[in-house]
Amino acid sequence: MTENPIQIKDSTANPAPLGLLGFGMTTVLLNLHNAGFYELNSMILGMGIFYGGIAQVIAGIMEWNKKNTFATTAFISYGFFWLTFVALITLPKIVTGIVPAKPEAMAAFLGMWGVFTAVMFVGTLKLNRALQFVFGSLTVLFFLLVAVKLTENPALEHFTGYEGILCGLSAIYTGLAQVLNELYDRTILPLGQPKSS
Image (cartoon, rainbow, N blue to C red; front, side):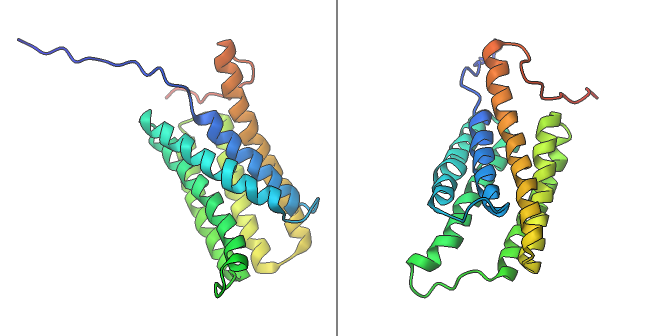
């Protein structure tokens, strides 16, 4: 007697738009600050904790249930990036004795994230063009931020802010495209699928 394996159809929602929108909207708002539109404020920190941070971690856990290693790694990692970023800014102000991270330390922090993102970009070469742009522009953003921390050049910081706005908008586009394309069951906003190998 042979056993027939039972196949269970995954009927859960696609969590990627949540993760992409949490990342993209928070990135745009932080980089509006970097571009010089307003000071670093509680709106950015709040977005960093809740939408950029917690929402991305939730999306990553949901991707784990779908057995999507790439998205799990990306969303949980970048969610905790945002939570760590907020902690680096706020902890020295609320806990006595914690030394604020100096520019060289922040450059090292951002540089590690740049290396991680560059490797994740290589993974997107198997995915759609929209995700390739998100991760490619994010890699550039991290290394520009390293240069900003090391040089403390205001003009470079403003330029980096505009590049970050573009990166964040690309993630917003990719997330909303997935929502609309799935909802209408056709391509409303193209993602640029890779050529099959």
